[in-house]
Length: 141
Image (cartoon, rainbow, N blue to C red):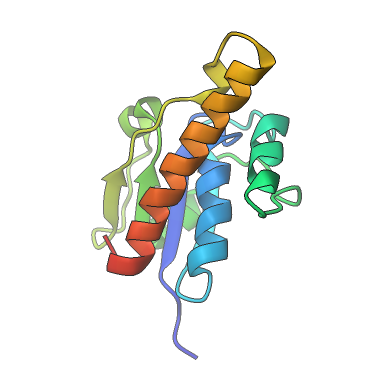
C-alpha cells in the first residue's frame, strides 16, 4: 500500500483553527492524506470549535490538543501554519523536501461581542478553512 502524504497543521494552541483544518482534511481528503495537527502549546480543544464543526457534520470531539512533535514535523510532507505566531515560531524542519505553507486565518477564539457574534466569527473562519481545504484536496496546492 502506498504511503499517503502527511499534512501537519500547526497553530499556536492547537485548539481551534488547526483542529478545524484537521477535521475538514480528514473528512474531504482522508483517502489521499494522513492528517495531524499540533500547536506551539496545547490549549485544549475549544468547545466552540467542536460545536461549529458539528454544525458542519464533522465530529472532532475525539481530537486532542497536542504540542508539536519533532518526529512528526520532520516526516511531514506538508507543514501548514494557520496563524502568524506559529508561522514565525515554527521549529526548524530538518526535512528539506517538506512543503511549508502559511494559510493565515483570524483566531475565532479572540472574537468578542454577543454569543451570536462570537458564533458567527467561528462559522466565518470555519467556512474559510473549509474552502481552502477543498481547494487543496482538488489541486494539491
